[in-house]
Image (tube, rainbow, N blue to C red):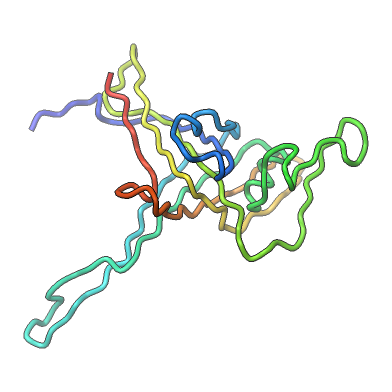
Length: 193
């Protein structure tokens, strides 16, 4: 087998978020808001849970089936904005939305309202764009991951320290969209030329 070094992917990705209600088409998702810089890149994981079907005649599994799967996107938001904090804590991060209000506590201010949440978490559409295989120094191709239902599920803290940047760790659980038959969790699209 010949080795094609342009298939070796190196480089960071960008992350865009939008409301789940606007995540009906990929074209609409391309207009989502860029959340800014991230620290240590971004990771998309596919975590299947396999079950062994055992029978008496084998000393091992006769068959293995997938009982469920979990898809996650993890990163650290490097820009300490209220919108990014709202994203990390699973609130509506849209400025002027239900949880980030502009100028409600005085002129030239933004306020992040956080309190008791209902049992239904806030869902976001998510777009991750990075480098695709086949990229060269003269032509960078893109790999784009789209998903319509992302929920921030990991613990996150806000810190304000003298010699460290304020960052927010975020882990999104990706949920399936039943209407998208065959791509319930999303799509990964590579640019080829």
